[in-house]
Amino acid sequence: MKNKTRKPLKLGDSKPDSTILIEQFIREKQAENVAPSTIKNYLNSWRYFNDFKPVNIENLSALDVKRWLNYLSRQDITITTVNSYLRYLKGILNWLSENGYINKIRIRTLKEQTPPLKFYTEAELERLLEEPADFTDFPSYRNWVIVNTLLGTGIRRTTLINLQITDVDFENNLLLCYTTKNKKSLALPLSNTLAEILYTYTSKLIKTGTTWLFPDMYGEQLKADRLSHIISKYNKAHGVDKTSVHGFRHTYARMMVLAGVDIFRLQRLLGHSSIEMTKKYVELFATDLQKDYNDYNPLEKMRRRHKKIM
Image (cartoon, rainbow, N blue to C red; front, side, top):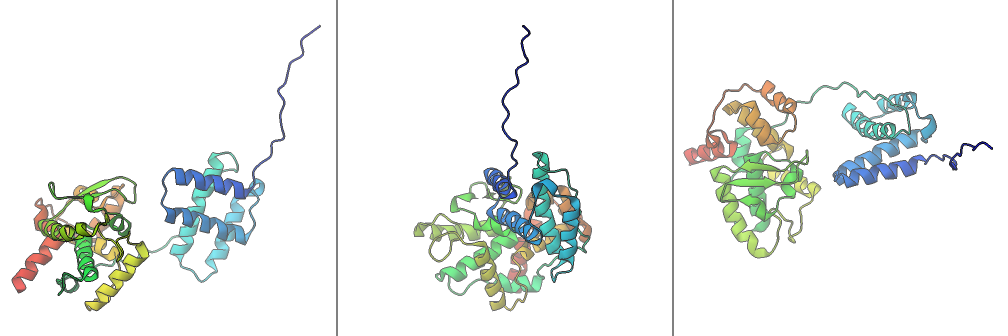
């Protein structure tokens, strides 16, 4: 009697629905320590896509994406916003494809003109860097230190609000940044002026018991939208119409380039993971090499100009 070939039992190959798959995708992104704001953008893009046409994973195709793109193009939203939706949807669809749930779907974003970079003029910086009349008034003192820090380091909004008091290394004149866009820690040099400002500021702040370098009125972490509101109010109070937090970063980069900082040093100072982004600044502004950090740091330049005026 011949032995029959045994076959293992096989249950029905049920495919999970889109809701379950998206939940799995989000859990993986959270495990990768993706920023909550990015998670929110993934969910919003998927919701907008699903609202346009309820997603059937088995039949999902490039045509569905194209129809959604045509629909978005007819709405009263900017090309930048449309491309933002597409980029986050692309991340989800790539994950579905890599895990074998759908065929590969290519997504191309729309062409858009690069908006001009916003930066502060030296006259505006003179007003913004004016010392507060009362250093015992915590909000005005803190806001002045924030402006000095933004201009003196060029860091992003999210990086600034996540700074702890202990992240200021006065022994080596460094600002240690652990929350960055590319998830890589960054040690930024402090100019002499900023080191002096932060030393005086932290000496007073540490007595309050907070651990945050720039806390809110209650010693808790400052929220990103609150920081934007603070800068807007601070700038207008100093007669400056521009209210962009990121504008300080553009200003920092511009003044560095014009002062002669080479592209590789600028890339490190700005924390760019790719030199391509740094090249955009260099292409906009002429550059000559110069080594001394205190000579080309924008905060140092403004302080020297202020002393001359005085």
